[in-house]
Amino acid sequence: MLMTITTLVAQEAIETTPPPPAPPRAAQVPQPSEKTLKNGLRVIVVQKRNVPLVAARLLIKAGGEADPAKLAGLADLTASLLTKGTATRSAEQIAQQVEALGATLESGAGWDTSFVNVNVLSSKLPRAIAYLADVARNPTFKQDEIDRLREQNVDSLSVAMRQPRALAGFVASRVLFGEGPYGHALSGTPESLQQIKRDDVAAFHKTWYRPDNAILVIGGDIDAQRGFALAEESFGTWKATGPAPAAVKTEPLQPKRRIVVVDLPDAGQAAVVVTRPGISRLDPAYSVASVTNSILGGGYSSRLNIEIRVKRGLSYGANSAFDLRRDAGPFSAQTQTKNESAAEVASIMVSELDRLATSAVAADELTPRKAALIGNFGRALETSNGLVTRIAGLALYGIPLSDINKYIGGVEAVTASDVQSFSSSHLGGAQASVVIAGDAKKFIDDRN
Image (cartoon, rainbow, N blue to C red; front, top):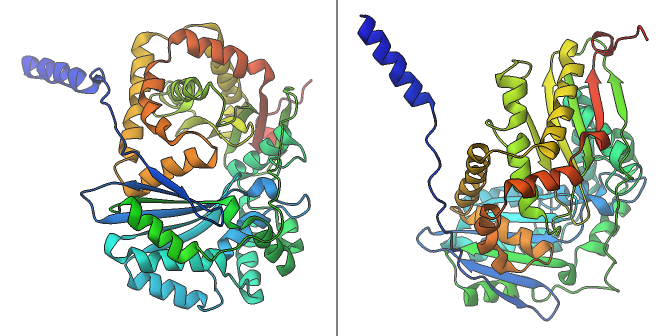
């Protein structure tokens, strides 16, 4: 029996020790083809054979950063309304007809872009592209649809404002960006949504939704000539009116450490966010930032998760991310924990930022975290939608499309010295602000 137990223990130790990652494999993405239509629409087609599926994504180069100062949430509301009725189809007809194709059609907005996506069998792509073009070009913005969506969004925000995680995130944005274009919630606030009128929605659409401010990316089982022909058929008559609007510029506040507490009496948990200005997508340190974040909070084996969840059991999980935008977006590390341990968790997070900046990362930590990034990248390219999303991200920021084949090499080239140097200049805890939303009486020591 003793021998059996010893054998089982030894076997368990072997099975729970992960093997070292294998050398990365090259991921050669087919060279995209592109063409600009006479109306200024940039069309990109990337062929992916073997699976009879196609994804198409229309990008409008304006999102939440273009919201007027008192109308936060306008870009998000406008984009979400695109599928709620056009000049020739009601919202119900659009939903039924898209479903009959076995397709999916969705729209929304980010910080730098608004979008419409469609995924469909390649044999049914012409009709699907026609629906995409119709909702992007001809939305009617009926008042009853605006009122219904506004009510839904206000209800969702009202709930979110009572949730520690969501509320801490809203506050962190304001701490970093003040009243600038990045300083509000992308979805707006209950107050700002009530101020948005139909004329505001129509004006936003007229200003930003135009072919010379748009990119159409088609990827999957389709060749370039067919893709260009479909784009010309559905978008060739799309006309821009008036001069093209200037891109919105935004800058974070100067780094200055702040500690902000949002008191939510009787909240079951506290949300902790440690934040500071990050980098833009165009920053030359993109690859270094990706690897650094993977080490810090980019997965289950990252430092934040190991220190906070695995070693101390203070949370179900902790993570971090650079929100890469046209201008420098935020870097944030975040988690939820018991109210009583909120201050301890915040201290651990700040300490981990400093540790990256002051000590070199060991090879047995650096190599697996780079392998995780490369593996996730490869998996994302396995689907037409993932491929289109990657290509669209490059196109949106004016990055050469060939750079998609440089991702793995860029990650592999990052050294421990690169990580430490980057962390010293971009992640030092002394410049990080801390936001805690929770039951303040349980984590604030009021004796001083």
